[in-house]
Image 1 (cartoon, one colour):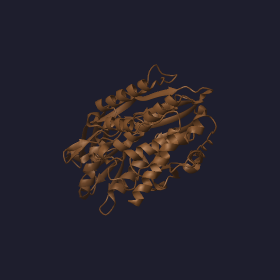
Image 2 (image 1 turned 90 degrees about the horizontal axis):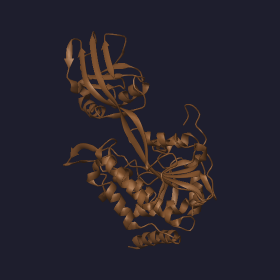
Image 3 (image 1 turned 60 degrees about the vertical axis):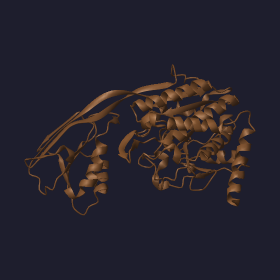
Length: 433
């Protein structure tokens, strides 16, 4: 009971620091937004789905109601672009004269067609006793064209990977990367083979949702608040549930973006231009943030607050969050200095082995030297709901989301008003991130 009272007092203390400003963040509104984005009728917000279109319309409506302006380069809140998509077609394999069932074939290729017949394609065997997933990763990462024969003792793992391989994917350029074909077979000696596979390649529309509040005295200096509104859509049913709602990942982050847009619009005191963006296609390769980074001059981007998975306590406890790439600029130091006298604290990323700095939408701008960091609370090493159908609103701590949004609002003040400018992130040398 004493511990609970202490936590409650700390939460109210932080809340009091924030609401001394002319406007405040409404906790009920935070809950409304995240409930809407993570609802079943959003169908898991998969890229190209009807669900993500519903999410986009909701975010547009919120931006319009707040009174944001479209970016100078756009006619509305949609920052549209097209990408090529690849979807597997017919796949056949004949090994030593025996036809292989299609469910025993995995084709990893962006090419429109593969037609191999006893030519010089490299052949690799995954042998008994080897780690299938480890060998699979090595082969894929080598980016060499190869035919890979996999022993049938790996049938269960093979089946799981095949299901993933049949999904529609976004590609940057077709017919340039290596083609790799995995065949499940107990053949120990290959004498002849014939592989034929086709892919359906089409162009498809994508769009970020972005709005801005123009800066009063420094309109050409940009501070970005971002999160991704896509998730992974419909999965194989688990106890009757097949919708991966993505409540924490990343409806929580987009909720923060919308809430901060409303907060700063009411405050009406930003000297720098503020951009609020919900990125698409983060889950499929960060294509939304890559497009965004090419539309604006990175030298004019002062900082990026990328917000990803803030729905539960961090490993440091309540009223805490961590910042990826903390050591790469003084962004985190500035934020923490602005939080002096509050109960909230930002920590460096406690999961360096996860390489989180380069796994979210901050990465593209960070590579261009922008102080672009992700703020998160996820315990990524033990979150059992991550990328499952159980990442639902009911698993979240709305108070954690609320206090983190308030902390970002307060800690971003000196960057927004032009008092502080974070140091640029050194651009990585080739082969050294």
